[in-house]
Amino acid sequence: MNKPPVIFIAGPTGVGKSAVAMAFAGLATPEAVEIVACDAIQVYREVAIASDKPSSEMRRQVRHHLLDVVSVVEEFNAARYRALAVAAVDDILARGKQPVIVGGSGMYMMALLDGLFEEGGASESLRVALEGRELSGLYAELQRVDPQAAAKISSNDKKRIVRALEVFHATGVPMSVQQKKREGLWGKHDIRIIGLERPRAELYRRVEARVDAMFDAGLVDEVKGLLRRPLSLTAARIIGVPEIKGVLNGEYDLERARYLIKLHTRHYVKRQMTWFRKDKRLQWLVPGPNETAPETAQRIKDMI
RNA sequence: GCCGAGAUAGCUCAGUUGGUAGAGCGAAGGACUGAAAAUCCUUGCGUCCCCAGUUCAAUUCUGGGUCUCGGCA
Image (cartoon, rainbow, N blue to C red):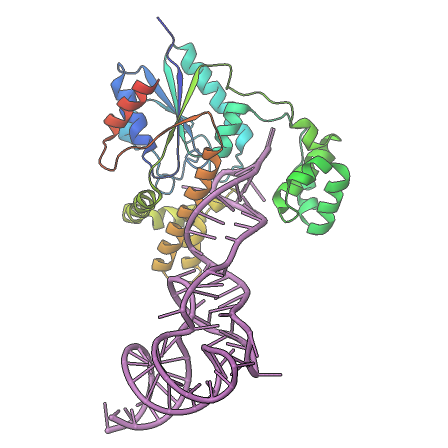
């Protein structure tokens, strides 16, 4: 018997990845397929509505991995995701099951598929010190210390400049040099990446309907609960959190927050598409407007 | 009905002492190697409401009209 390939279902928020993945699992014999989330927000235990996390019913039907792995007060990142996800995929394969990775976090997808370079161990204090400095000085230093990285990074992109400098200070080796050494899942397994897409207008309609559904499901209360805790950098920026915080601070009303959440989600969808479009490994699939998830799942099965 | 203000990019508006115009937001495209739902880059010819007049030349001045928003009836 041939080993089934590892499936990666990628695509922007709101295309319907989860439903298709569930349907795909439904086409196989029971428990033959396990799902691995590739989502930077669904990893948080306390975030269900805002992250549109698979329901408990779905999780009862198909085993899911990389959901609820950390608390919102804990710092999480692509490296931690990668370690956990690689282990999950290996575990699934070792048990003779088929992994279906589902998600829209381009950075995490890249970390899992292509790996990350091994970092020396930058400290929090180093980063804080760098962030306290002026942008122009930071960029000038990067140009001196790692001209290759500086050439790729915009002189306004403080986050990336700080990151590159932090790597250099911690290890003494330019980040651009270290970046050449990395290794991921791609090439180790037979991986098929399916890119799910829909016409932009349709996608935006779905996204907006989903935001409305989140409000109905109790998004405001969920966010209120989150805001009572010392949120990690990433958790504090989950779409929905800063927008609703603005309402609680009396900056604007709830309708404004709803508008902003829709707007920011649309922007996010657009950036996701930029990321996916450049990855030539994706095999694109556009479900028809009335196509059901099982029909799409069957099309994926036919493609592979 | 009267008085006043306004009509310029998808939206909110700036501007041109008369030589056909520009910001913010939106939108679109792009980058992305340990915060990534983050961070950053690029892209603006549009009947300057309509008609007539003055002028070498009007979106800009003058007259008329239409519409919108205030105030007063």
